[in-house]
Length: 193
Image (cartoon, rainbow, N blue to C red; front, side):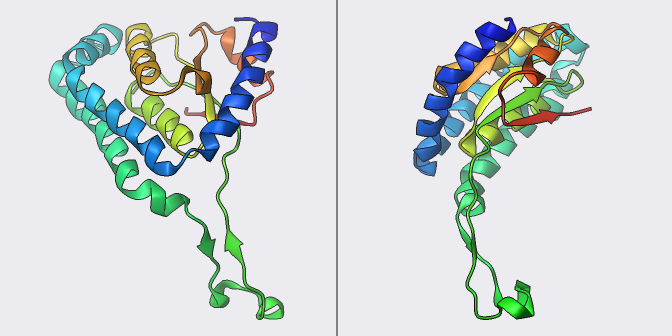
């Protein structure tokens, strides 16, 4: 995908992201629950992809990637509503010259988050970052690693089966896609490594 094609997709994503951000958290978490269930159902297929990409045996794929990602999803299902809600600032955390002021912190989505994927834990690390960004109300553009092609393919399939396609886009895993993502009109970049 070149810069112009990505720019056009990002225009559409901005509209979808605004609608996604307004969606109640319980609706977003239903998608996370569905994704978690798909991880379990597709575990053999995912483990095979991880073996092809990195040589991880089934037990390691399950214990180091699939189950931790499922647990991260479960954590969000249980805690995201609490973590993302507005919070009052305690008076003890307010400077003395503002002691009569009442303040709240409102968590807002960043907008469109670009994620440059990692190769060493391609399911777990990429999956957690993508799911967290989506639950927080962001759109995600993911540039996966060129060293985990089979795992990238399955992760993208599961995400697109679960979340609206207008808020998640996968770029090519080629090295050229990184600069295209960085130079695009995104609001935040996540990179592990």
